[in-house]
Length: 336
Image: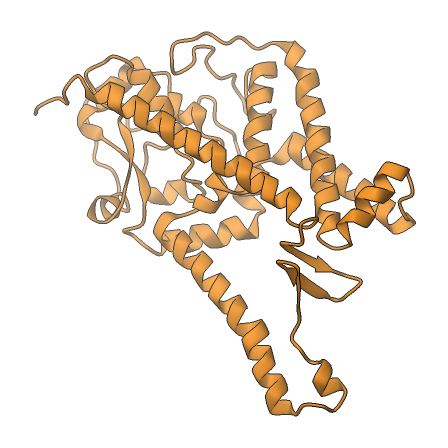
C-alpha cells in the first residue's frame, strides 16, 4: 500500500478551507435573504391581502373572476393548476431531488436556523467547554489545529446576548412574512405595536430563546419536518453523497482525540455507516477537523465526500480494521 505524497495534506487543507469559506458565504447570504426577502417583496404572504407576494407581484389563484361570474369552473380549475398545484409540485419535487442526491445540504449550507445553531454552539463551547448543556463530558481543550482553548465563563454573556438577539431577529422576520414589513418596523421604532403584534413577538421571542438556549441541534435532529423529509429522501438513495471514512489509514486515528466527532454540529459520529448518520447536514466540519489534525503528516484526511459505488458501500456494516476499536467513542457526544 502506497501512502499519499507529501503534497496532499497542504492541498487537502486548502481545499477544505475553501469549502468552509464558501459555506460561510452561502450561510451569510441566505440569512440576509431570509431577513430582507419581506421588505424587498421578494417573497412573503400578506395576511391583509390574503395572497403571496413574489418579486413584487401578487401571486393568487385568480379566482376573482369565478366569484364575480366572469369565468367558468374550467377556467378556475386551470388557474388552480397553473398558479397553485403545478408550482408547488415543481418546488417540492426539486427539493426532494436535491435531498435525494446530496442529503440535508440545505440544512448545512443555507438554513438560517442551522447558522444560528453553529454560532451559539461555538460560543457555548467557549463558555462551558461543550456545545450543549446536555453533553455529558467536556470536549478536549486541544483544537484540531493544535491550539489550546480552555472554557472561559466570560463567554456566557456573549452567548446569552446572541440567544436573545437571534430570537428577536427571527421573531420580527417571521412577522414581516405575514404583515406589511415596513409597518412592522415602523411600529417597533415608534413603540406603537398593536396588541396582536406585541403578543406574537413576545411569544415567538420567548420560544426561540428557549429553543436556541436548550434545544438547537436537538430540534434539527428530532423536530424539524424539513430536515426529516430530506433525510428520508437521502436514505432512499444508496448512491447519494455521504461522508466516507478511509479505513486504510485508520491507525492515524490513534493520534486523534475524536476531532471529527467533536466538530459535528449535530453531535454525530462520522466514522460509521450511513444509517447512523441519518441527520448529517453535509456541512463538512468533520472533514475540515480531520484535515487540520493530520497537519504535516503524510496521511491525507481520513474523511471525504463520496457518491456512487463508494457511497453504496457505506450502506453495509463496516469491516473491522486493525489498531482502532470498532466501538464508537461517546466522549463529547450528546445523549440526544
